[in-house]
Length: 136
Image (cartoon, rainbow, N blue to C red; front, side, top):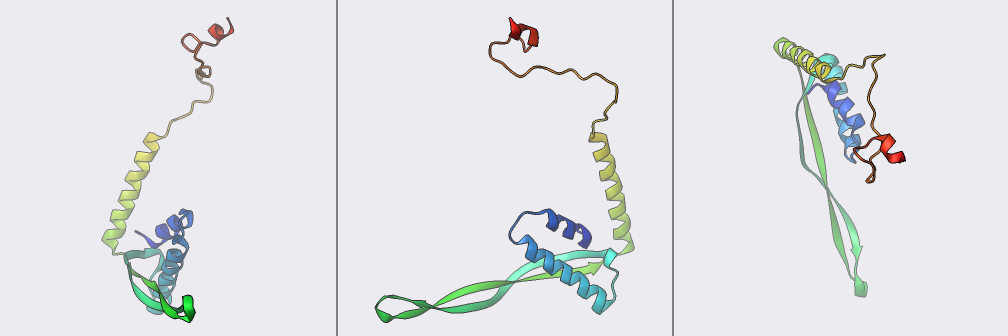
């Protein structure tokens, strides 16, 4: 998936982790452009994975004056980005055109002066859903 598409999708996602993943991908894009001189428009998310992070240790107080150690594990999110090859760019452009054509065929064309038939709200006593029958 392109980095731009991933960032757009994460902005619209209503999940708790989406903000963190957005920040990591944004940082990976910035690092790739600044440190390695890659084109930000041609970047792909090659892989993303989660690994072990640090363990936060906290004191847990128990009864009778005793205490223990609470361990709260954390994780590390790693995102690898790479630049697209020209073949991949052509394939992606072709895929976008075909998807656009499919979506445009599905859309219902609205005719401005065409009369659209409407039915009344469903009523148990109505005969066939006709408004004139409901009045009698």
